[in-house]
Length: 471
Image 1 (cartoon, rainbow, N blue to C red):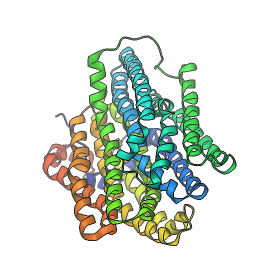
Image 2 (cartoon, rainbow, N blue to C red):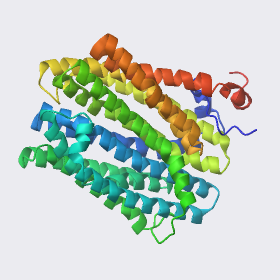
Image 3 (cartoon, helix red, strand yellow):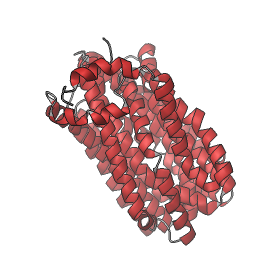
Image 4 (cartoon, rainbow, N blue to C red):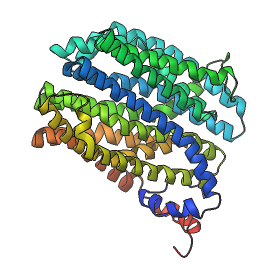
């Protein structure tokens, strides 16, 4: 019976985790492999999100609340770049790992080379477009008044580093699929630390203002790419650069397969855009600055969840390619439980220490209070976000992008615009903070009741066989 298209459901993941960890044959070895892939990816994402937060602190303290609002307006663009990079990285990476699982190394190498060439061309094109039309783009994103010039300045300097930005993200994923997750972590962490150091220098010493933050980010991304290139220079895996022909069918394949990653990022971008518009209607510039701070802080948990999903993708894809379906399910269960733990720790820290953390960004009392309340309400959604993100990433990793796209479509296009319109109309700013919780919950319920309703019957036989009789 082919059961590879359906993951275990949420509750079975929790109930059977003890058995997998301590009783299952080879369970400890699988847990070790899971840790070796997931932890470096999660840690790298944690450091990346940490430097984003420190970047926000430097902008808030060194430039001002107006700059915070300006950076927040540009967030959809940075998410768009991240989505483009992950589309090729995860789509190509899935095909690479599947090829390696099937012992077809040459095919995996050719897929990597094609994906890299297309990414390079695309990043050049996007860099040119966004630099030339930066002012029109920030106006389209909702910038006006005093925020407009600040947002335009930040975007113009930020997109000058579009190429290393996209290549750094994608190459990290490729070398992870090539068996080198630790170097991917070191590259990301090193770039993050350089970014932090340059933030201080450019903002507080050189007094470059908001453009200093953008330039520091770009130089950090350049360092990330340089370190990743060591993997290829010293031939640490199978992948290598070289001449190759571009095949339309291959390009369409990894774009189709990787599109859910892009869609997932665009989902977040759409949410940020809708919330910016809603706050502009029911609030003011101070509350827009509050949302900017909330965006900085929630970047941590969102990046951790993405890091978890990206980290286990090679394990899903390789074992699916090798037809080791039981291993795929077990790695899925590890991932679900890990997301719950991550969200619980993050929520607890934000709840008990959030007010003091927000003080690092601003000294304005009204912004402090509004940000803490908004952060607490906003954070409730991430318990469901984690499950939706992991389910979406799972389907993508096993070469089933249709289901992944349905989940992202439900999250962003269907439920979120509706919930934020209704909740902001009736509850104002409180409704804005709660709208992600409403939309993510509706997505989870709709997917599992309507689209995934046969899940239990498909997996019943598997769980009966894999669970001890005395449990």
